[in-house]
Image (cartoon, rainbow, N blue to C red; front, side):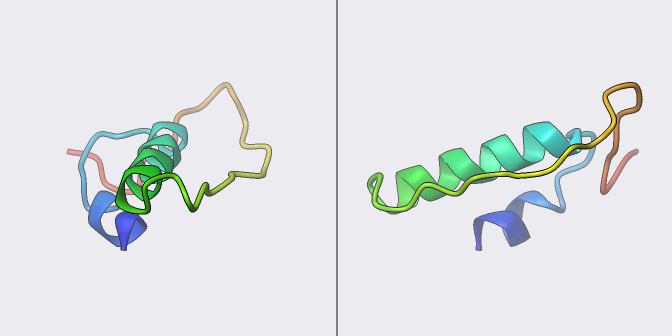
Length: 52
């Protein structure tokens, strides 16, 4: 649910988006669920799901 709500936010870089999703989940579950992000996205380019 947190991801579905955040993905539509324009101009949020993907790494930031996943950190926000993590924070939303932690808050919604009172810390009982803590999502982790694994991967190795390139650091030279930003990626946006939705940009203006």
